[in-house]
Length: 400
Picture 1 (spheres, rainbow, N blue to C red):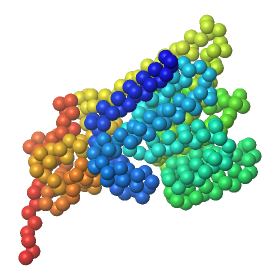
Picture 2 (picture 1 turned 60 degrees about the vertical axis):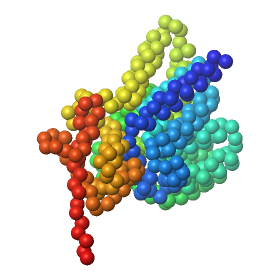
Picture 3 (picture 1 turned 135 degrees about the vertical axis):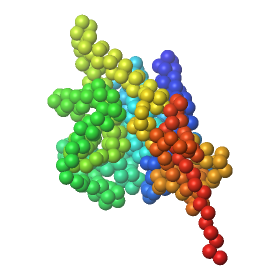
């Protein structure tokens, strides 16, 4: 009974925290790109939702939070396959919901939350049903998002090693279809994005957890205790690192594949901890405590990142700057009785979401924050100006 209460408490606090974050955020240019420029399954679904509930942050982000909740439940169910005690499973669930990468995927409109849910659903069903049923799911995934191409690649590698020739052919065909539909490309010349990729992975997981996840994958390989999840996670990690030598990666497509390796890492940690006598467990306790300290600090930074503006000379260097300004700017314009403007494309699309349309009668121009003259619009966080702009009314003469 107590375990059930803790389970619902963790998820309840998680959802409440995410819900109260909605008001703090504006739609970003990457989110409007998916909504207005992509011809994707995700775009169609969310444009349909917005057509029903209207263009607002709650209609955009509440479905993402619900999907995150479903992912957390699936993750907890999968963890039972790797961890024996409910206490360990609950600790792992807590780690999952606190990860900076999971928090971002839980509220930011991107392909990451869809890919993560799809991966967890596949693993959950694969543990319970024969491959012929999960193959139907793979067929569906092939046509809804290009992010699942790496799932197909990982399963293909797995089938090759276990010599499942029938499924090798099936997965290879699906991988070719996915590569064709979503124009998956390997391009560029060696350009040194490897360290950037490692840095982003470390930010998504926190450095200690990222290193331990990679270490656990290596340990399981040496111990020959590898399963399909190991093949999926390891294949995608290696593939992403190899690609990073030649091109900058969209980590949102790759990070979910390392998140699903968390149960493997937890299993390795618990086994290494419990096979030792109490006097030899100090190192593992230190790793555990430090991991959660860094995780809590990173989580607090993600949740209360607006405070950072007070300490930045250049607000645009804030890591989440692109998730701010647009909502407040739209409100300011409406208070000035301005319902349409002409501005740069990215801001134009962000304002469009908040029902500020495009027109030729009002020109919105961002000005430097060091601009000493008066600006028509100034947006500040923590008493720190982060955006200034002028609005110029343009008189259009009637050609008649």
